[in-house]
Length: 337
Image 1 (cartoon, one colour):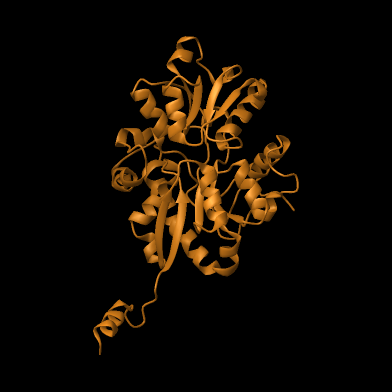
Image 2 (image 1 turned 60 degrees about the vertical axis):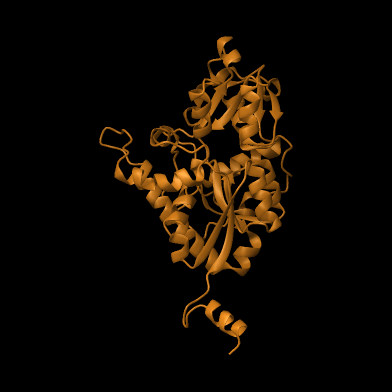
């Protein structure tokens, strides 16, 4: 047998072994992706026969585009106007929940610049007249401001939104004095505050709770690789369960508890979450995620309707066409068809 033939034989999997499905997930390096990071580092995807590569991006829209274009098999991030338009064209299918803004759990913060704070900008009710850095028009940050405007009765048109394309650019715009405020995930917000580069003036979960994001895949994968998608969701749910045990537990008085299980998942978070979190930061920044990946379905319908009312999503798009609720049991508030 030639050397080349021997090398080829050695490269083959053992008899009876199945080659793993290769898959790529597009994600942001935030705590909201923690269940994927945990499942990856603890071998849950490997156990389901999936060789997973994680590609990180700096804005939610890029995650949706990566899946729609075929550069990634799965995505996990916040809903955006761009996401809804791509999903409305048949490119994407939502298959499980990611994070949601839930009272009592901090994830996304409102940040005032030092100058604006000193001038009296101390409340999320006072965004009218301010300049705010966001990633893109139609982003989740845009929607956060829209929810605030609806709740507190100011005009969204009175807020000057400055799209700067990425979260690092949002942070730079605030510290550089280009804007009065921005809206950031807790880990980033806490870093700015620790660096005395801005002031946290509130948390989204205390003002406008909502289903922030989801796990999704391409419509093609649902159709052609359905068993693999099922196995992916199963591994993801194991990561969710570990995350819930680590960060969502509460004592009899309702106080959050962080013990050995929280410490045990820190290596996975330290590897993937940026800026690299300390355990003390993790105890604040670890946001709420349903332990089984169940969605607040009606809230997604409401988000879509808002984006359509703002002219950011095509009117014909229907949430029922891109929600595949078959991979996870027990979703909440499912509208009657």
